[in-house]
Amino acid sequence: MIPAAVDAARAALADPAAVAARWRADHDGPVIAHLPYDVPAELILAAGALPVAVFPPGAEQAQAHLQGWICSPARRFLAAARQGELAWADGLVIPQICDTMRGLKGLWQFLQEPAFLESYNLPRISRASARPYFASELSRLRDRIQGFTGRTADDGRLRAAIALCNAVRERTALLFQRRVLGQISNLDYYTLVRASYVLPPEEMLALLGGMDVEDAAVSKPPAVPVVVSGQLMEPLAVAGLLDQCGLSVVGDDLVDGERAWRTVAEGGDPLAALAERTLNAPPCAVKNGPVTRETYLAALVAERGAQGVIFLHFRNCEMENLGYPGTRDHLERLGIPTLYLETQWGTAAAGAVVTRLEAFREMLEGC
Ligand code: SF4
Image 1: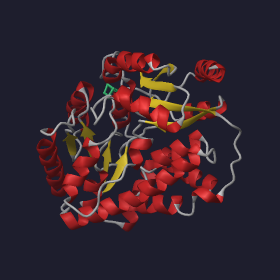
Image 2 (image 1 turned 90 degrees about the vertical axis):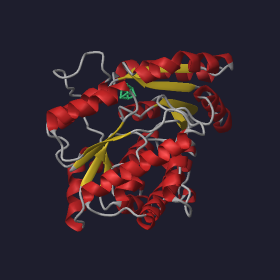
Image 3 (image 1 turned 45 degrees about the vertical axis):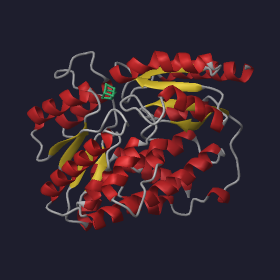
């Protein structure tokens, strides 16, 4: 069951155009891409469109249009748009999470003039005054998407979309339990979670159906438990390197990790519920949470019995760079060993990363 699901997930990530084509064969709604951060996909689904996150394979970057110090995700996204790799999308939502993303939207509009290009302005902080602001921002986004698709995303349709996405999230959470039990590798787990941002929810549910926690014996050799902190498990190959080096991810704060399987409350005001999901999300580089990031990570380490924290940061990410020293120092003051890995979109210096991961595991085994 799992190998077939992982193969299907890999195929979807490698060829989102095929996913979009399958969707169009059965639906008459558009496909709306979004950059891979916390975007409320339910708003897109409820308006009759398919939400698909952008994970362009490869490492080609938009050298001619962005300065050398701009982070590799922004460069890769823009290059993908320029080279026609996102031609499968009818529209695009760009979450405004940092100055780079704000600049990217204007440049994208200038270079490509997409039929639909919309900002999503999520709050940086979770205090009380953020709630009314964020509710109005979600309402504005809903109006803009409805205007593009021509379908009304009323509360009933939004509730149905939330229930469907929650069903996927609940299955993904079960998958994580299997991950912690060693029944599924780091690489397979992150491949499947990432695919949940690309495949239609019904297809994802069909893939994950039948994968109950009890139905597989533990077959993996024991590994050292760690927490991974960053934005994305990117390059995805790093998850395979963690497997190779005997490190088992038992917790993370990644968009294509634990952030993916937090459910939205059902039954009340659906826009308010979407807002609460984001406002109560774990802290990250671009948004504060109910507690500070260092407090969150320290608690995660204790709760999951992890032996250390691996920071997986994009080179030149101004947001991660700002918070990293304080977070690292806090964890190390608590006696939690940390390792810093800097990556670029689509590129892992596998040999060097393996050497550092192996040294970290040996250090943790000696603790
Ligand atoms: S990697 Fe950092 S700087 Fe680049 S888009 Fe993401 S948050 Fe912004």
